Image (cartoon, rainbow, N blue to C red; front, side, top):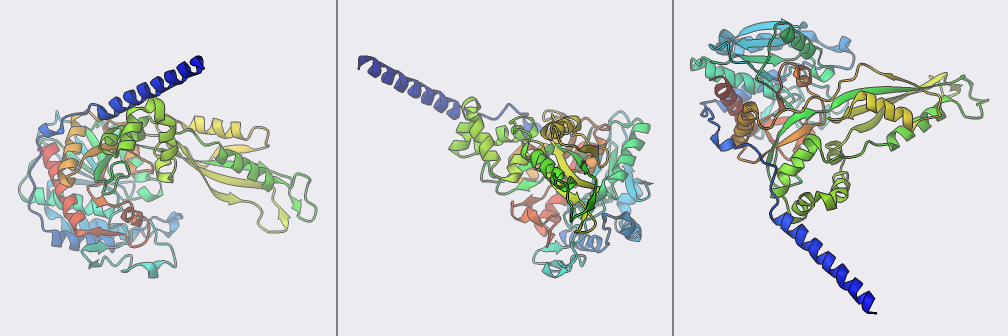
Length: 491
């Protein structure tokens, strides 16, 4: 009995010691050492006309620059109208900058600085929008291409993604140009025409810049925003994307003999083989990891979160499995921490009573930093070992982008301005979708993805969805951000 008592006392002591260690680490837990943003000298606010900016965004929304899956359906005359409208609407900015047209409809503006020794700053916003799903037009409060100004907002497809950025960027440039602003650092504005359909325009711009030997101080594009109800803190946080996932679609084909469905083979043919393959690939998910930009975001914000969050992150050595399980509870949370696998398209027989000669699945991957398309392919082959399959990429994969600095002068400037504009803390994050900026990672070491707009997790769902609209508060905030960013970086 004495031995049992000693063991029990020993276990109690271990538990108490463990509790003390966890408690002390939680109480003293701080975010990883960051840069001091308080010393960044930001340009002051500029005088803007929010009502006029709203009218301008309304007009821009009415140009139906829709990138369709089939490019033959695109109405490129709408892009031409938008270009002419930009010239007419922002005369001071156009007088201050030179304009080039690349890849037919992508725009490149250069506002030449007085000091050629300073690397240029590149700001991006694309012209095209996604289609409105046929049959859902009646679900919109206001016509999707009407540009209606109502309820304190501008309504319509593209009002946020990404004509909202394009218009507010030009509003800021116009306001500065009217004052006679002369930049020391060259400013380049890149407006891709087909971001929603692969970004060939941005690729052409990247090639052009590389041929000219242009190395930028930083690139800023869309991607992240200010979230009012961030799950980690419960409050408002400005999230700046410092990297984005790669993009790849894997074609998996099961070849078969084909024939009449009245006499199927014993193994039921290629469709069954394909079904086994898709199930096996989808079941073999890449492991979640608390590293990279997603982990950096959690480490940065955890000290401001509730006690359980602080405790878990302060004691990752003990609670990491629990943290990963909690993150995986939502698709968005899981997507921040690993490569995702999404079977999206299937093709089999052209008729229900015909056995297909081949059956194909398209599986879309969003590849996390630290992973690669080669590793993705190897994982898929390993998961389906023994099945007669043919693998190929639907098109050349885009690898994950490099991770940009959170200590550079460019980061300090963008982060300080995001914090000042939104009146909220700032954290690095990962863009799980794709932007045109991925093609410019060779043009600048620091590529950031941030729109100076505030959304809740619920309202952000309208992007690419129904009832997309830009609030007038977000409109004014974005104009101020871009004007001050230009003046701060180039002044």
